[in-house]
Amino acid sequence: MGRAPCCDKANVKKGPWSPEEDTKLKSYIEQHGTGGNWIALPQKIGLKRCGKSCRLRWLNYLRPNIRHGGFSEEEDNIICSLYVSIGSRWSVIAAQLPGRTDNDIKNYWNTRLKKKLLGKHRKELQARNKGNGGILKQENSSSLLLQQNSAQQLHPCWPQIPVLPLSSPYTNQSPSFNDQDSIRKLLIKLGGRFSDDYQPILDGLNLQFPHGSNSLSSTQQIQEEQVHVGSSALGCMNSIGHNQVQFGQSNEYCAELVQGQGSFITTAIGEMVSSNDYSRRLLGGSLEFFYGEEMITDNKIMGACASSSCGQSTNWGETSSSLMYPSLVASNYEGVRQEMPRECAFQELSYPGAQ
DNA sequence: AACCGCAACAACCGCCACGCT
DNA sequence: CAGCGTGGCGGTTGTTGCGGT
Image (cartoon, rainbow, N blue to C red; front, side, top):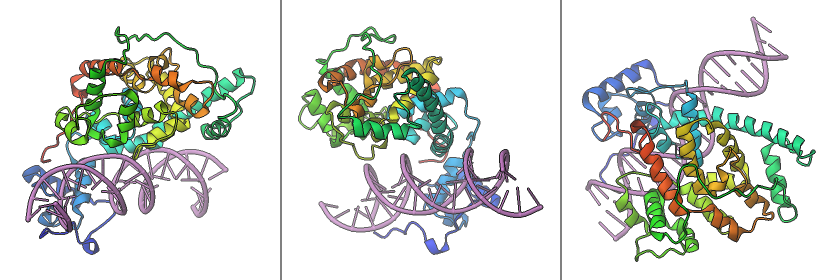
């Protein structure tokens, strides 16, 4: 009401930014800030650009201390770990990598990291196929996935997963399903995106919340830490725990995971982070969140979701129990947080001039 | 040298949540 | 309180450059 429209699209320039435009935008923001209104900014400067475009240009390219390219192995690991943990929440992932933008990370993942992991998985599949006497002859994970889905009612299609002792190198706590306080804390901590989508999880865990306390509005009260983790994970739990696919909204990662691709990603990531303490701990916490501790041993991170898509011998009542130890996860998650380097602590990026 | 395919990156699009009027 | 504008985010598309044939 009474506000100017976003921009006059007819008079807005599109396409690559010229150095002159960059200079104008950068010098203005450095001197005056954004003024809290990106839409009005281009008019003030005399740029024929959409305000959104200016904002993106500033955030992704012009603001100080931005790094492009040259991702280190450490950064790869962190990205992969966080992707497994929270899915394609690029802005959150970017917040853990100083100097990196969500756009950069997103591109990097889509163009390199994903393929890197795919390559690893293909190699592993081939090796495994040889070991299995050629039972598995899929050329890629998607064909494997198809076979899994079509044959899931009939035959197990993944190697039997050894049942490993439920102990973790990162905690001495024993899992307890009765620790509803911890569960509640975790879910509340995840609260940023925690909504009714995940009500079935609460139902499945038999949680008793005070009236209305599991609603989005109440969880938002506890967002001072800005931890927006777990929508994907919760969605996956939702799917796994109920032995049926109930994808949460926009839960692409969960879809991937349950369909089987996620398992190869986590397998490969498991290898990637095996020599990296921070990533291993981070991944350990996050994957335990998915799979339970048995998934994080000697890099054998696989099986739960693969099994879920196979529907093989897994008893889902048992599996979901062994998969989810919320109290354990919560404590591990805290541990991971506390042990993170300061610059990696979960926090929102703040930009000069940003509101 | 020309063409083609692919990878990498920049930018746009559309949706959503939130706050303002 | 409804409607609208804005900021923010993730997905997708467009462009460019490079390597191979």
